[in-house]
Image (cartoon, rainbow, N blue to C red; front, side, top):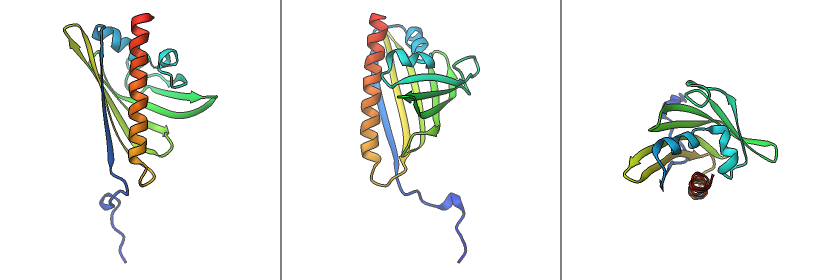
Length: 158
């Protein structure tokens, strides 16, 4: 029996999408600077230790940079910046790790408002295990909401 080409294979799981918005009472540049200081996530995000494993263009946090998140000395995920348009938009993808999260791509948009900044964090991914998508989506959405609330607090209180 002939094999079907890989591009015609239907994936077992559907694409999961998340969109989280958060308003900051801070100018776009301040929010952008703090958010795109990838190693600085250690100080505010509550996601463990963040470090750069490769610098990007512009150095250090631009396109091509890879940030790694670790907890208890175990690196869980590596993310590569794929788009960097200061101070408006950053895009990234998981390039290593992520467990059952597959094909994770994210975009963060920073919109100036009269009295601050509206940040919109969009992600899409597939679950590597059928039936797990909704649980992963809810977990990631909660993680994003908590991280952005922590960033807001960090911007207000230093």
